[in-house]
Figure 1 (cartoon, helix red, strand yellow):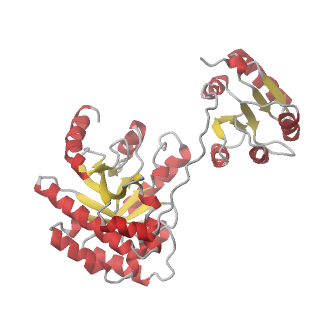
Figure 2 (tube, rainbow, N blue to C red):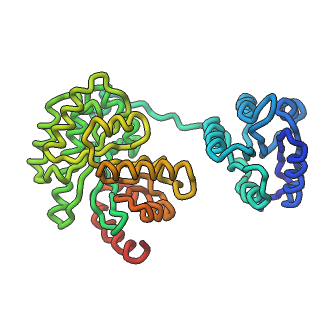
Figure 3 (spheres, rainbow, N blue to C red):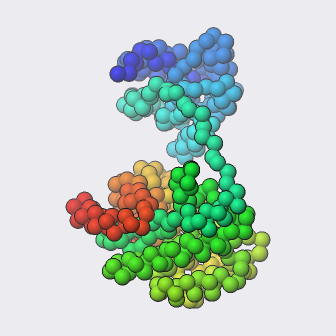
Length: 402
C-alpha cells in the first residue's frame, strides 16, 4: 500500500497563496513531505545542491523569470526521474501541448490542473502516482538490409495479417485491411515499420506490394467461396505510383483472382512529397476509372491532407487513430474528428475511424454516425486462419453487447 507520507513532493508556484493552498490540500490527503518553492532557480538549486530529490513536482507553467516549460528542460539536464503534475490558468489546449512536451522529454506526467485547483481533481491525479520501477535499457531496433529482405521474400517469410473493418451502425463485418508481417526465423514477428522503408530504398517495394496484394486477393477469394464477401484493403507506397504499369499489374491480379475491383481498396499514405505528381495522379485516376476504391490513409497527418483530397479522386477517408482514441473526452480531438467526418460527408466519401480502442470510442462513432470502425476494440490484426472463427465470435458479441 502507498505510504503517502513517504512521497517527496515539491510544489513550485510563484503565488504564495497557491503554495499555501496546495500544501493544505496535500496535508489533508496525507501527503506531508512537501517542499514549497516560489521560483524555478531556487527549486533547481534545492534539487541539485541540497539533496532534495522529489518523487513528484507540482509545477506552475506561467511564472516570471523561469517559466515551467524552461524548468522542465533543466529537469532533463539533471536527469530527473520523478513525475510531474502541471498547474496553470492557461486554456486546455495549452496544457495538453505542455503535457506532450513533457512526455517527449521522457518524464512521466500524471496530468494537469486548472487554476483554481479543485481538491477532488488534485486527489485523483495524486492517486495515479506509483513508485518508479527499474527501467531496462531501451531496446535498440534492429536494422535490416535489402539483401535480408530479398531472402525473406524468396523464402516465403512474409505473411499477411488481417484487421477487420466493421459497420458502426450494424456491426456487420464489411472488410479487412491487409497488414504484412515478417516471420523472421530468429527475431520472431517483425512489424512493417522495420522493413517497408528498406523495401523502398532497395528497389523491392513493387515486388513486395505484388506479393502482399496477390496473397490478399487469393485469401479474399477463399473467404468469398466460404460465403464471406469482403472489401480487401491493401496499403500502397508512393513508390508504387512512380511506374505507369502499376495500373495494369493491379488490374491483372484482380482478373486472375476473380475479386472485382469494386471490392479492392487501395490505401494511400503520402508520407513524403513527390517531386513529380504527374505519374501518381495518372495512376490513381486510372485506377478509380477501373472502379478500384481509393482511400486516403492517416488523414490529417504527414502530407495526407486537404491538398490530396482536392487533387485525387478518393472515395474513402480514414481518420487517423490520433484523432479518434479519447476523442469522446478530449475537446480538441473531438473537434478534429468531427471536422474530418463532416468534410468526408460533404465530399460524399465513406469514413473509416482507425484506432478504436475502447467502448467510449465506439459509442462516439455510433453517436456521430461514422460509417466504419477499425481498431483493437474490435480486433487486433490476425492470421487468415483465425479470421472465420473471429467472425462468429464477433457476431455473438454484437448481438449481446453492442
